[in-house]
Image (tube, rainbow, N blue to C red; front, side, top):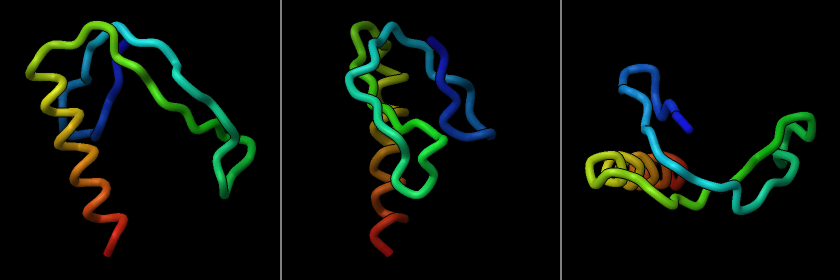
Length: 61
């Protein structure tokens, strides 16, 4: 699977599974989902964590 975190970055490549899935809160026609990573490089793992931390920081303000 390849996931694009932002338009400016290269995609994260990993082997993962869908851990959960549900309709998005504000847009029920769109599905929100969580991934569980089975195989991911250290570099891509750090990029995902950095993205999550940055997103949480923006979301709290």
